[in-house]
Structures are given as structure tokens and as C-alpha cells.
Length: 265
Image 1 (cartoon, rainbow, N blue to C red):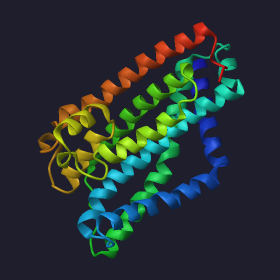
Image 2 (image 1 turned 30 degrees about the vertical axis):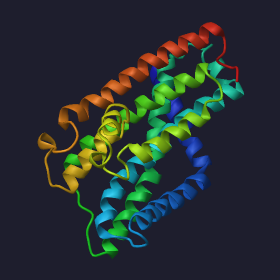
Image 3 (image 1 turned 120 degrees about the vertical axis):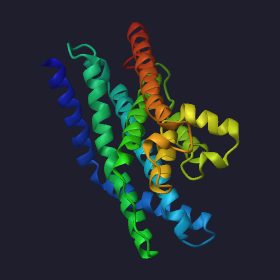
């Protein structure tokens, strides 16, 4: 019951913060779709080309989600460290796992509105061009893989901020890296082989984006994905990243508690 109450309290706190910052959310729901359209215009040399709208849309939705989810979890930890709330939390009987899981769930929920705004903008742009946004229930699998892998990445970054202070630049830099070499805007097949290899291994959204493009653009099934490393890696990569995130966060958490630096910034 303690775990459930703590988990529910963290989710509620995250959602209350989302509602309190509705102006920020509204602004992001405007700027991210505009950013998507500008990227398509740039890649299309001033034209909203129909052949670019959907491929870029799939990458942009994933990029928006990972940006929102990771940053919301990271800044929630950083804010609690700066205010001393996190140190007080560890003095209570509340299991830290409840706090961690609650923050992750709240961040995932909070990331959805902006990602949906980008998706809706892409659907309208495609319709204006005379097309239709395709849908296949199989995309639920890569979407779930993206969400799970992103949570693992967030755990790694949050664990680092418990021990190494003032690492905000890492979260911003990581999103820039995903945009450039993560297969979000340019397919990994068009990148140098070493870069594509590292992206498929380390970037939690890369296999999911490749799978969504194969399904929605190529009409392929999950069992016969032609690009990337297939269904096995699509399922294994987010699990491995999440396991690595749990292990690393746990060790860094114990290190911060032993040093007594949970409230130091």
C-alpha cells in the first residue's frame, strides 16, 4: 500500500505540474508542429513535398516525445534537488522505486499532448496535399518500444544528476544528437554505417522509427521488417536500455545517499 500510495502521489504531482504549466504546454503544442513544417520546407527547398511529409512526421513525433519525456523527468529531479524535497523524500519509508516509476508515468502522459499536436499537424498537411495519414495497428509495438526505451534513457540521465551536478546541457545535447544521427529526419540507411550502427544500439527511438516507416510506408509486417535489425532488436533494444538505466540509477542513487549529496546542488 505504501508503494501504491507513493506511486499515485508522484503521478498526481506530475499531472498537477502539467496543468499548472498549461501555458508552456500550449506554446510547445504550437512551436513543435511549426518546427516540423519548417523542417519539411527546408528539406523540400521551400515546398511541403508530399514524399517528405510522412517520413519526417514519424521521426518528428518520436523526437518530440523523447524531448518532452526526458526533460520533464530530468527537471523534476533537478527541481526537487534544488528545493531539498528529494532529500526529505529519502528520509521517509516511501520506496524510491515508487517515486521513480510515478515520475516516469507522469512524464510519459505529459509528453503525449505535444506529440499528438505534431501528429495532427502532419495529418492536416498530408490531407492538404491530397493524401491520407495511414494507420496500421502494428505500429503500437514500435511506439511502445520507443516509450520504454525513452524511460530507460531518462533513468540514466536522472541517475547522473544525483551525483554529477549541473549537467543540464547533456539533456539538450542528447536531443540534438537524436535529431541529427538518430534516424528521425534522415533514415539510418542514408547515414554512414558506423553512425547507423551506434544509433541502432544507443538511441532508444531509432529502431522504433525504422519499424514505423517500414510498416506505414512500405506495407511490411512486424515479422518481416526490411530495414534495421528486425523485430528481435526492436523488442530487445528498449529492454536493454531500461535494464541499464535501472542498474545505473540504482548505483548512482546509493552513491549519492552514501555521500549525503541528495540535497546538494
